[in-house]
Length: 313
Image: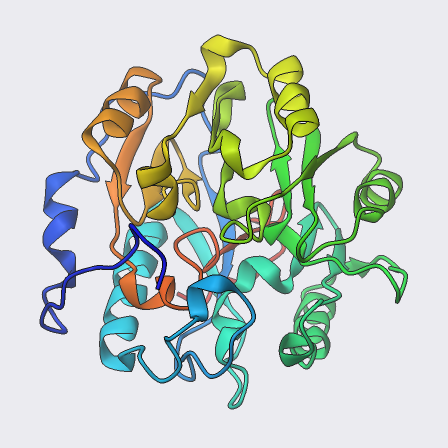
């Protein structure tokens, strides 16, 4: 178990108590508004569980995730997102408990998709299923080298304001991934080296927001990467979170129309997000934290695909 991330035992259906603390009602418009309607891919947690260990969060958690509570938490997140986004689904598959984390399906921008090359052998069977989903939606599948691991939007985050892709590497995705993304999408890819195994994917510690804002945990990166972030994002646009918020996966957040959906949020972080023009919305996801994921991990945003993807919920 990792210090700072345990949650008290509660009844299966009391998970939403924290949500009442932060309303989903708009608290103002973000400095540069996000698109009015977005498309998001999700996967129902029918077969979710912690069945193996491929990241530090899973240690001592095998068999410990309560599926009824996980389903209730997922439905809560889905319902909140569906109020502001078009939600599409990929079918859950027995034996693939991490398929629920659709952020790792790949990276899709416009009509092009890169399907993940999972570093962990336990997740490699997901690749074919995600590829079939992208193909069924009409995406062009970009070729990717077999010997370069890449775990999709877990490690590659589109910064709409700057037109760049932030790309994490070091634990799951290879150091060569950024240059391949840059060639495929024709956008600058900024390589960021992750150095703390607790933050094994970029989306666990880094979140680009609309209007050029960034929310991130500096200690998850090496010195050169911190300098790169600070050189690109001015200080007045950076929201640096502390370790407590980072270990609650506050940066593993989804922004839709100025609302930031996240597992947990300290009073200080809440105040800073509000000051930046965002509305924080807490959606507790403690069961998924046992597998090392939260709101962002459970979603794959599909920029430019709102008219392409067929909503199913």
